[in-house]
Amino acid sequence: MSDRSLIRLDDVKKVFMTDEIETHALAGIYLDITRGEYVAIAGPSGCGKSTLLSILGLLDSPSEGNYWLNGRHVEQLSLSERARIRNREIGFIFQSFNLIGDLTVYENVELPLTYRGEMPRSERKRRVLESLDRVGMSHRQRHYPNQLSGGQQQRVAVARALVGAPSILLADEPTGNLDSKNGDAVMDLLSDLHHSGATICMVTHDPRFAGYADRTVHLFDGQIVAENSEDALPRAGGNQ
Image (cartoon, rainbow, N blue to C red):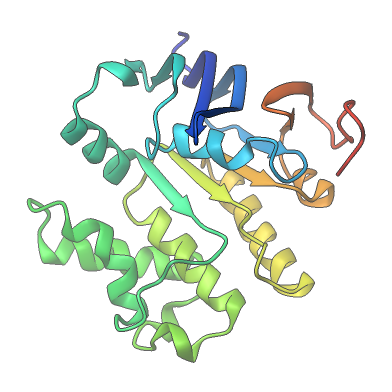
């Protein structure tokens, strides 16, 4: 791996077994993501996008193949090491926001840092306020999620993903539960973060949003069927 390579997948496959039926969710993925890159993973529903993102985020493991993250061979890591890397090096942004309803905005953003026992409270506070400021939500830090619009909740979710200064942000359909105006605002926010140096990998089924990325990887039936640096429809079937 080169010094700039952050993620490398080598012939990664994922097979799910249900009632003795094999479902091949990923059928041999080769992928490199370099530091500072913004990559979109696009394709129709059921093509393996979210499965791939779960593997990248160490939430799932491949059935076959190799995955290197920051130069480390993921398959050789213990469960505790994987959990530590998830907390420190990966920021997750989910379609459904995944905020905790009885915690304030401030507490939701602080939560990932509370698992780092050695971090002083003053440092946690500095990071939380800085992250909220970056997404324009400092003025809502004492509010609860149900007091916010969907767009505001997603901004808080982005702040929570940023607070730990991760190596990469993984976004799974980050505009999926938003109207077009709020969706555009979240995409503009991700673009700003990318321009300030963040590495982003985003799953989307919308070719318009894929166009925000430096590079689009098109999945179809668990395989990469096209890859380009400008937004385009996948070759296979054109079923977007």
